Image 1 (tube, rainbow, N blue to C red):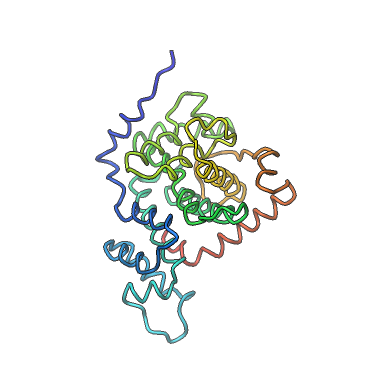
Image 2: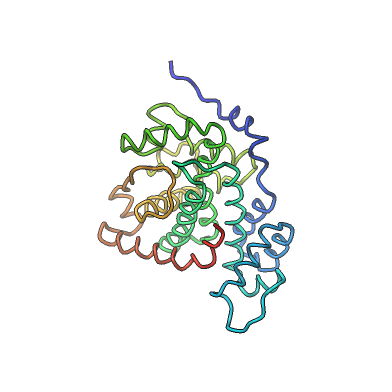
Length: 296
């Protein structure tokens, strides 16, 4: 008889190990979904988080953002206006997520900073794919991409030993980690991540892409009814593939599964144009590096 995994019990057992989602992250996600948000809104949020304030000041004083002889920036107001709205909100969001991922200690086989770098790549790719398919909220897609693999942090925190064994097994057998989870009835990182997002009272627009980011076929996404949510899942699913293909960071998967021709056509791409688009994502990631990779 197949054992039924009690995800609610798993999440409840982690309440002390993984504290509630930082309030600023919850508010940032809301701001990223609000087309009327502005730099003043972001400033109000980051002022209450010392670690984010410190990181933004660090980045604003990087050589990429300063002129020769320019005085050092010492206030968060000046730093945010120096960086601009787009950079500021992404830095604040990434600092919050990186802090969350670092709650679990890295192992020889799995580094949380590498997972964050992979997640950052998926976030940037999700934003670029939004433009490709005319999805009207690239910031929302960015947030979904950044959070899509949070279930791996849950698994690492719940039982590091088991998770490390699973990584080794997937690598040895050269199969996708998600496939291994399904084949062996292991804790699924997509479902664990979605359960944690729900426990943190995150909106369905963020929960659904976390839950279904490995599922290409819309008919198999049993509890998704919103066309917008399907679009976000499509975006994150495709972004995850491209980032694995490019090789940004490491999320524990030993192989890269290729989307179907039907899905590529749905995205307006062919096998030939896919390579060009992957190069575009790689360039977008490189351009984001000066303001974001300093966070490591």
